[in-house]
Image 1 (tube, rainbow, N blue to C red):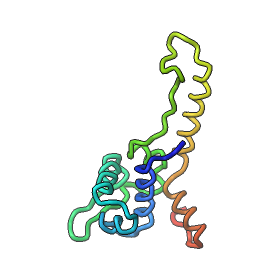
Image 2: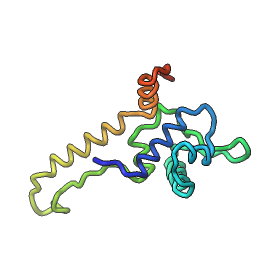
Image 3: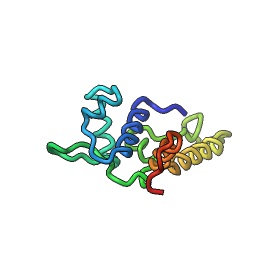
Image 4: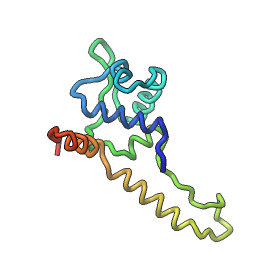
Length: 140
């Protein structure tokens, strides 16, 4: 499985928001990620529609997480970014009339990958980062 650029940058954006104690403006995020403003706005809009981020308007506005980091999974972020994992159920496309020797394997693979993606939270990622950098973990 390979993550798209959109998923990579979107997850990085969520990670940055989880580390921040205050809302981040799009320009602040752009400076830290070197992502172009138009692309960043697309990512933020997708994450907003997916109820991962929330936007505040005004002088002190910006973007924050819409939920606590422990309530946002990698699977949630990937679905919001239209990059969720979905393995094909059959190598032939439609197994309704014929036996597919791979159907059970592909279905199990799909279920196991999605279970793994939904078991890792944004808080897990933040705490892993903090422990590897010698910074105390948040919100156990």
